[in-house]
Image 1: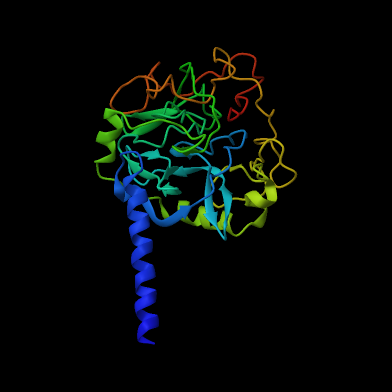
Image 2: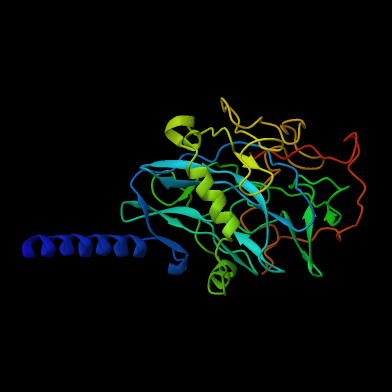
Length: 317
């Protein structure tokens, strides 16, 4: 029994040493961001192509979908709209990063500025660096209609700023063979050292719900989950739920029965409708939100040619 106990303890020590070496090999980032215990030897699938559900109302923030891991398989956590836990809060998505022969998960967080998320193009304003889908203005969040799907009869603080994205990759991880080569810039390093708030309870529950749906696992959906995005956290079926392009079931593939969004908004590059400008988050401004473009407007007039107030949903490129 004594020898067995010594052996098991040695195994645990070796495991911790391997994990520590893997962390040291990762791109410079806050160690607190790493979700301890989640390390995988196989790279996650590519980011699925899907449309964004229409924003349910003022104050909701978009959190892009990502690949989680459980039961020896990756599963897709649908992108969804949630409320920020505090005024001025911005969501930095999590990402998978390669190091020491393992893929490690770096958890997302809320903060006043956007941090490093691996250079992964999650779409809808998260083009690999920064965020250009909107910004806080005077205590309220204003939405950039060129990259977010908002109905201006429901959402009253909007502006329209054209975004050009040069990152069209759907790679879902940083480093290693085939991963992004991005490294944190000066602004992202500053953001990483600021106070962070972890994912809210509704985000955590949303992730858990996805992990209990076998059809969300990559071995079943082959990288095209039936539920790629949902209108609110925890909603996995019904109106507003969308499936990935090529999915065989689950979501409808449409956002609130609108067109699938293959065409970008007016004045937006066809391949760049969803990401940040270049590799700087749109403006190089320290808040990581991108250029303000126009001032937010209340009761904004919808773009011409839309046949109403609902814009075509934006599709992850």
